[in-house]
Every structure is written in C-alpha cells, then in structure tokens.
Image 1 (cartoon, rainbow, N blue to C red):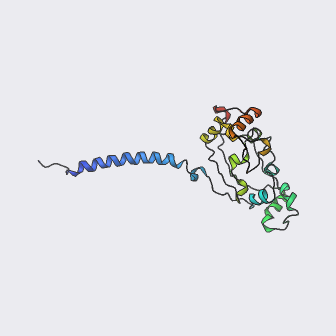
Image 2 (cartoon, rainbow, N blue to C red; image 1 turned 135 degrees about the vertical axis):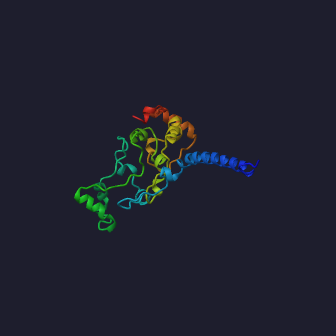
Image 3 (cartoon, rainbow, N blue to C red; image 1 turned 90 degrees about the vertical axis):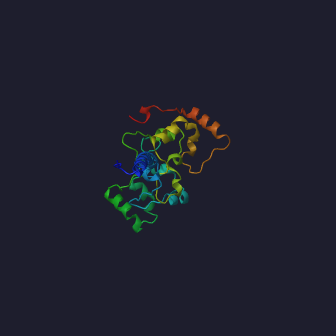
Length: 216
C-alpha cells in the first residue's frame, strides 16, 4: 500500500519544528537585546531645542558653572531650567540683536517661558532627587556625561533600574568632593577607593536598594 506522504515529509516536518523553536527563542532573545540598545533607551540622540543653546560655548569658553543656570540642583528634587531673565542677564549686552536669540527676547518681554524639550525623562513611577545626589558627592558628569562637549545635549546614561542599582550598591566609586561636583574633568588623585570610602563616611552615604527609595 502506497504511503500518503512522501519520505522527505518527515524530514521537512522536523526541520519546520526546529525552525519554529529557533524563531521563538530568537524572538525572545532579540527583544532582550533590543531593550538595551541606544535606540530603545534614547541614548546618544541630540535633542533639538527652541534655541540652539551650545553647552560647549557656555561651559568651556565662558566658564559658566552648571549651578548658575540650574540653580535649584543643590536644594530641590529638580535641577531647574533657567528663566529667560537669567539668559538676558548676559544677552542684553552679548549678541543683543542676534536673530538666533529672538525666541529668548520674545520670552523675556512676554513673560512666556521657552518650551524646552526634555532630554532625561524618567517614568512617572520613578522618584529622583537631584539635591540628595549632589550633596552626597555625585558629580553632574556621572549621570549627564561630558555636557561641556555637547553642542546639543543628549542622554548618555541608560537610566535603567539596573544601572541605578549598580550605583546604589557601591556608591563609593562615584563620589567626589562637593567642591568638584560640577567639574567635567575631575579625577581623584591617589587611592580612589580610599577616597570614596572616606567621602561616603563623611557625607553619610547609605546603600539604598529597597524599593521605596525610588518608587514612592
């Protein structure tokens, strides 16, 4: 009696099963890899702003400290965005008629704030306090990268829960003297680990890894 299916059908069926398994495993692995890519984490993509504010010029050329513009970073959860009155403090004399600065002048005279676009955007269920990190010795460059080398600011750190927890488990490696908080180039001299332990004790740094530290 002739068989209903040809002999090669068993091999084809086995190959199809193997292909389905590999496709399923590949799909899961692919998703795990994708969520860690810069595309998904929005890293290294310069964010356009209503005014082309060049941090390289303001930080490197003019030597402006981060806290001059982000003036609430030491005592508030938010670093703060400078009002146009702060901008016009310089630009009423420096390039006062520049067409590029027209949005700044319009904002200043109308009282309407500039619609800056957020670069670092944590989910609403995550609580982050700038002041506690800065006052405990975590420098701006640790999370924001070399802003002084960016024409348009972009996100450098992944800002994932794992990334935050790595720092919370061993914060000593990321601490610096408070006097060097805004320095983009500071490096510890001598034993970095010993300095980290010393600063952690001096500043009362704790290893906060419980859920309510960030999820409140």
